[in-house]
Image (cartoon, rainbow, N blue to C red; front, side, top):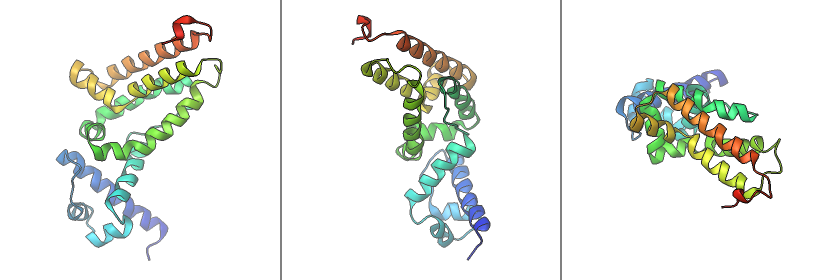
Length: 195
């Protein structure tokens, strides 16, 4: 039985091999035999560490969110606003992988845990200092911010407006700031806050 350190290194090698093949092929349907070959391991070893494809996808998604893209879930609204600037620059470093994460069913499944964690953290962070914002306004703001703070936004700005990660990050951060400022400026009795 390998030591914990050796097992962690083997898991890491499998994930890195999978990611490298995804980026090279621009496709997530990488056969396990190809991952094993790339990692210089047997297929049996791959299954020892990842009993099924979903387990490999979950582990890869977690690894991508923390190690490749370095996403940090902020603890204050400024972190959330600036977070997309950092993310967009990282997406530019791995454009094929980012596009696959954005557009494929498998990519979405790899992002889902992070997106759910981000939703909970964002909700807790955004309204901590402004509890009087009406629930309907909070919901609208959260929904639009979730659409903006997303790899799909980076991809749209890149493909339709030829923006690089820095430009896309600045544009999205600006939009999030505007939404937050306008939502916080509303009061419960403000008729313009009603849809």
